[in-house]
Length: 274
Image (cartoon, rainbow, N blue to C red; front, side, top):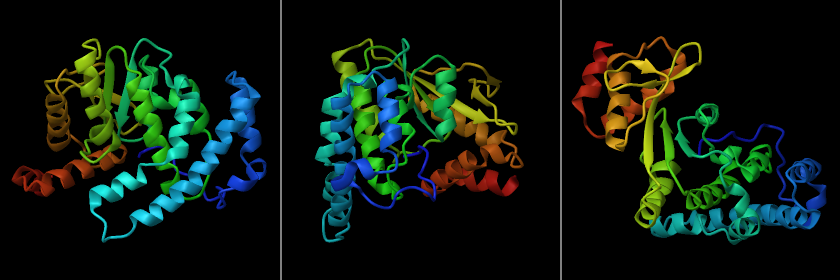
């Protein structure tokens, strides 16, 4: 996941058996009250979150056994029953507040960029806004599966066009490995769920732009094909990216590593000539 990670001050305890002692309980109450949630729902949701931290800790320890098949290990880590119960309780508050849904990859500011374009990403749903403001625990590996469960429930609520924003392409990301395959299934049931792909590039001043087919930076460039979107993004990074632009260095690095992993000589050629 690429969401904001806990700070050094994040709690190191689970607090499941003493939920009201968790330092973020007052904040959670405040956020839920502002969101219009009844106090009973707030208390139940909080207990499910903290219980989920405990169960995830156990699942992660179990899945660390290298004698278990890798697919089984992933399945165990993703089988948190407390997190699923949380979605059953408040999942309807993951619905989008704008006409279109947004998915993203490449850093949290991509999510904010999508929102500025009039789309709703998970972090800007009624429930997502609340969870996004919590640290919960110092161990991010206990929270990442919660976001995975939330993202799955979020995607399941797609009813129309879904805009996908990419600053980097990672085939192992939640977006590509989980959310997009889910959307493909939903598309078969609802043709209105159309995917529109946006390749992004970050300028040195931090502004995000989209990449047109002729490799120009523009305010809007949507593609109906994932492969075309990724191709345009890769070509721009390989041919035009300024290696002195630190704001885009991570995307450039990840792109080169991926191409090198695929034994693509173009990556070596361009990197050596740059």
